[in-house]
Length: 293
Image (cartoon, rainbow, N blue to C red; front, side, top):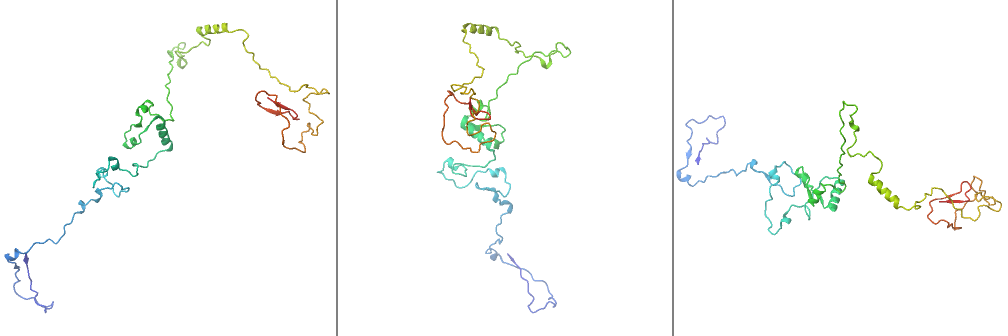
């Protein structure tokens, strides 16, 4: 080390005093014996450059919010750190629940129910991870063979029936007005006769020959009525359809009676019908008879 000294020039001098005349002092150099005993020290500490420190290189598996834009390599870097040798491969898998990893996704209720019911019915469903891979191909899980036979149809989709297109005859030349058929051309397999064929006629003749005469049922289209009384006329010769006049209530009047009561007990039971009754109505205006069918 080189040590230099400078005379102070006395402590009693003022700033206005003139400097002393003479040559400047020479620096003092340490002898070689002193240099071997002096250790060179670096007073500045070791500082790491800011560019070399990257705390965001490591992303925790439980991190939900990132404060920067990581690269693909940073996102999918394997986990580092102490590993438990007693854990199975299933226990080491990444999961946020006890049974596995659950992630929210946006799907309509109808699509979810369609895939769920299709899986319970046919044993297959669409693979939801195929959309994340952007493969562009629909994959199935479960019974893949059944899915290929069903062409991936859900339980709400019906099998498409292939309709065979009927062939038409030649439309002809448009320049020929007599031979041109155009869109009115008949089909190749079109049957123009409306009557039965020869085989059908023979079958009908055999059936008529075997059928006995008189077995044809007669159609009963006429309406009929049944009267459930012994005599349709009374002692004065009046028909049963005439409303009686000897009651307290005037059945010919259009005004309702002064006293009307709901029935409270069974007065009579009609048991003339052998089958079910379709409708029961009162006689028009007077209402003294019941008409049933």
